[in-house]
Image 1 (cartoon, rainbow, N blue to C red):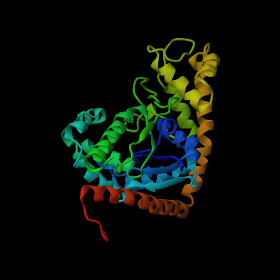
Image 2 (cartoon, rainbow, N blue to C red):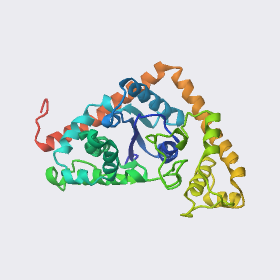
Image 3 (cartoon, one colour):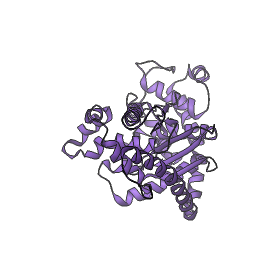
Image 4 (cartoon, rainbow, N blue to C red):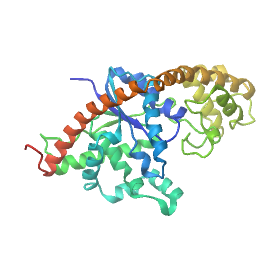
Length: 337
């Protein structure tokens, strides 16, 4: 048997932050040699909210460059742009026609985002979990690295695959592979610097709530210096009354590659005046090599063009084969068949 196949992606909406890196991309890098990987820039998902076309195009290339800068190795991984593979949109439509509406209406993220958008909420926002399912199922993914907030969407993907298999397949002929989640526990849910009860997010209006991968050392110092803390001396994990403390310790733990036990012992007697400079230096040191590699990649646009062109060709071959299998099972005639 070959290596298991992994599929994941990030939206090109603003600079990636530590939550994206620690909760997703670093996990991809750490485990990439054990699997066959497809990492996409999910730009179709980025247009479920109002967007600037020029910024979208720029961010799409920037995210692809960051994948490489963070350590994605093209010897075992394929990097591509979602919208360049038409099978994503086509399979999403076919899956729409077998997905009950009430499955989508119960999605927690849709409910939360719909409240914020009010009357401007789009059909795309409601339907993007089906597009996410198409993204995953097109590549016969065995595992899908996701954050805790995406577990419900992956469960929906599994339900859709099972429904297609039940309606159009047989015991001997499975149409779609049912994927498993791969959730990183340490650092999987990085919280806001301004509110330890909320996830670090690109959509937060305050830049002070997150550390971007491309933030300068001065920006990192300013954000950590001003981040929310409490008046208690001595730092500890997992105290529900001290969410910011647990979050900042968790950041230090993952960025410094230590165990929770080691960090708890090191920081047990520290005050914030001693810990914040320690976290700042650790974050700057962890991000510096990524930022250097990112600048080198952007200085050679031809290289990035080649990476994305090669990725498109490989991804399209795999995706089209899956799409044809689904279309044939659903009764569509195919060219040459």
